Length: 304
Image 1: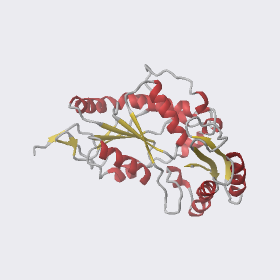
Image 2: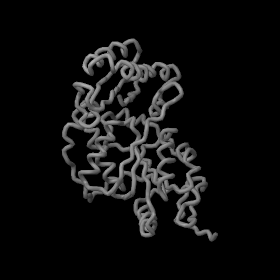
Image 3: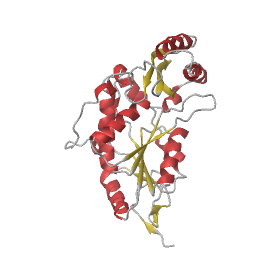
Image 4: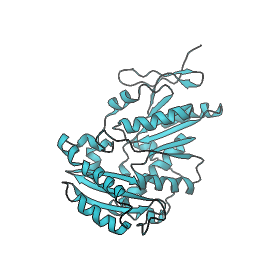
């Protein structure tokens, strides 16, 4: 089979050298420039190839890898973006401390044979001239994460909108750990009429039950043990669903959570569609928790 050098973009070590084999990348490719990415993807789309997209903020773990593996298996090419988005942080310290581990991220992804890692700069994501127009998310950004992190989902919508315009994927993959974010992205996708299928993927967990998260890198071993009260509380809620109403179960769960060491921000049982507090069990609900383990804010949820 003939081999062609295809858009040479290198890391510092020149270890990621792209070649093109029968419309599939044989090696992971690293790209920084938006126009270069769009050119490559345009050529593939003209041949009818499908593009899977996994947007991330880096500090990748096995949960991200599972998303990428799924996208890779279902598409001709997978694009993984790594961009720590400043507009979705309402806490400057949190933005400054967010892990940035590009070398480790690339090492984790190196087995992907049909992949591109897109690491843009702020100017490419937020150009001076933009087609983006904000819209009202309704209740979705007024509760839980939206209530405690004002402006957070405005930033999420803006960056995902702009990434969707750059990549124009066939399918985009998101983890269910960020349940409210997933609801927001579904609404955004429909509002802007992107022809993109949104794929939700189950939360991956450590053997202990702790949800995999980039923020776990900032936890000590003891804090990782302390953080298990989140998973234990979610399990408590699911176990006792048949006994209590949603309102009573929230009160019981709050008492259970207080046996741990974390500082709770919110614990709510809400309808999976509206994100309004569940009044009964007639429709599917989800229990969502946000809490601080030391200085690290953790979130998790469990479908009921």
